Amino acid sequence: MKRRNSLKSLIAKHYLVSTIATICLLTLVFTQAANAVEVEEDVIYGKKDGMALIYHVLTPEEQNGAAVLLMLSGGWYSYLIDGEVLATFTDFLTDEGFTLIAVNHGSSSRYQVPDAVRDVRRAVRHIRANADRFGIDGDRIGVYGASAGGHLSLMLGLTSDEGDAEAADPINQVSNRVQAVVAYFPPVDLKDWVNSESEYPALRFDAELAPANSPIEFVTEDDPPILLIHGDQDEVVPVNHSQRMHAALQEAGVTTEYIEIEGAGHSFGAPDHSERVEKATLDFFKKHLGAE
Image (cartoon, rainbow, N blue to C red; front, top):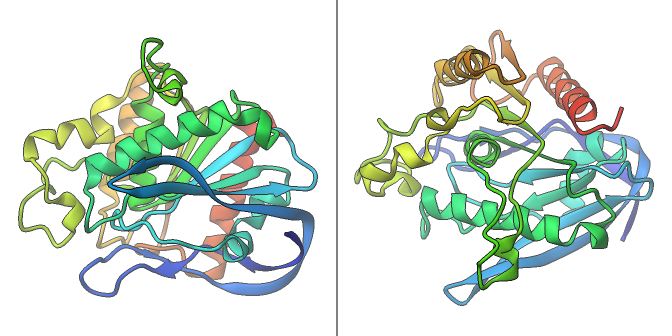
């Protein structure tokens, strides 16, 4: 499918109203696409429990060779969004030549955070193994997401590995490392969040596993560049999550940037906020994925 005209979006969608307080906003404005996009939907990167794990690939007509992965997750619910809708709020990246790959993981409420982390790690391995097919450089992969998607993005950036050369599954032999991370209002420490009565079903897992699924526990000097963006009025994921993460990254000597948006809650709904976030995200990926 070639997309000649698009609806430009700021980022978006209410994932739930009361039981899941994670919010991403979608604002639509008509505009002319600068770089037509071909969409390949439902690429299968794994299977479990008789179901397929999928991602969508949005390939711009003029590629710059780098790929950016979008974690489709809010409250660790992973919603199916068709390629045309994805194209409406990711064209700030595809217009600049980035191949956009939107990743679905096994969704809450059936699956929990550790399952989602395993899924997205496999997705990166599968994408890198198919880099030639997608016309991308396997060493120029970035990832971004909001809230739970930001958490998963950080887990990819901070807990990746080179793959297991002895693995029976060829995909597991491939590295799941990423080269740049952008996380919007991410929860970075789950140790006080995991319990059997959490309003988020994905957080109802063994509390002993919480440190292994908390990005703040894995900061090391060899982590990729990381951009954190958070509103100072966030009542869902307190702003100190990003503040603490930024401080830990700085202390470890990791390349990191932090933007705190005054007056923003658990979203970037105001047009000036969203435009600022898009520009910062684009500039960061261009700088660190060699696409300037």
